[in-house]
Image 1 (cartoon, helix red, strand yellow):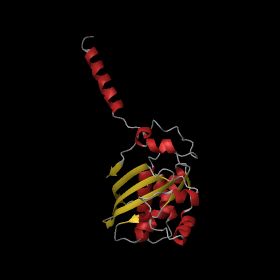
Image 2 (cartoon, one colour):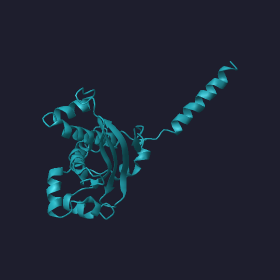
Image 3 (cartoon, one colour):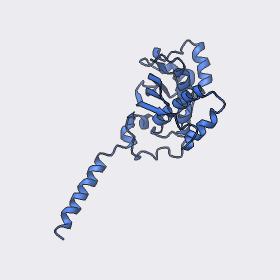
Image 4 (cartoon, one colour):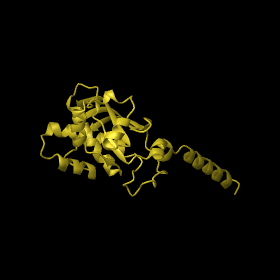
Amino acid sequence: MKKIIPILMMAAVLCSCGTANRITRESQYAAMYENMPLTILVMPPINNTSNVEAKDLLYTSISRPLAEAGYYVISPLLAMDILKAESAYDAEMFIDKPLTMFREYFGADAVVFSQIDTWTKRGFGIDTKIRYMIKSTASGDILFDRSCDLYLDLSENSGGHSILSTLVDLAVSAINTATTDHIVAARRANYYIFSDIPRGKYSPEYLQDKEVEAQPKDIKK
């Protein structure tokens, strides 16, 4: 009995330490829960690479994971036409400025900014380094901020080992292989980032995911 008690005490300490170190979505994305935007506008990415196609590839694939997470995302095609007409296509012009004009013009509660720092083909995959931010159009505060430094292995594209990869493969089956690789890479990078976002109003998990363990804020693998 004397031997059992110390073991139980040690187990209790280990359990409490594990609980103390556990970071939930509510604690990691507190600003997101406090503001809980409903309508989101996605700005064209800021492209700091020499790959000119990366900007459009990433832009056209950001909306889907956000919509699946329960947010109403303004159509990128519609937004693009308006942004170009208003000479507001370059996100660099607005990332550090008040965003009230997007609230008034689009009815957006928040704006998604992304910055591509690396986009390089290597072997059977693509090296990517991207930062994503969601900012409130009311206060200008950053609600969500994550980055990914990923090598996206595309050697098993045709295998489709997950539902996501299968859907992606079906969606791009008519496009040539070189372009397909970059489209798949963009979609995977976006899914990596937004898989951990607090669920929006149109998700059955809305406000029910606060205690879900959060993923690392910055992904590198």
